[in-house]
Length: 120
Image (cartoon, rainbow, N blue to C red; front, side, top):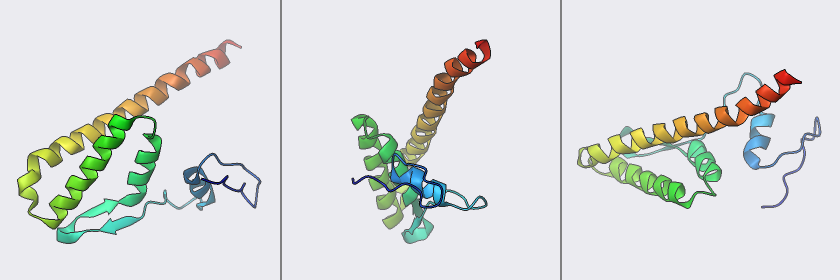
């Protein structure tokens, strides 16, 4: 992708489009997360999906899981979701575990920096 232009108002540079869109949101706005409406009352949070794929780009196994889970969600929305009830439950648990893992890594990455700051 081409370099993302710096913020026209404050000049802040951005590493990716997600940082840029987050920066451009008003303080009272939530994260930009467009929703794709699916049949049978389902929806796919396409913004979150794209962010998750982007964050996982260096982990092909995780990207593979995300893509398959998304495909299964689309199938379930189009057909009777009871056929895939067990799979969908596993999908939700796996996604929660990914979230916990990311938060733990972030927490552990931040901890040494805080220790260094307090010791200075």
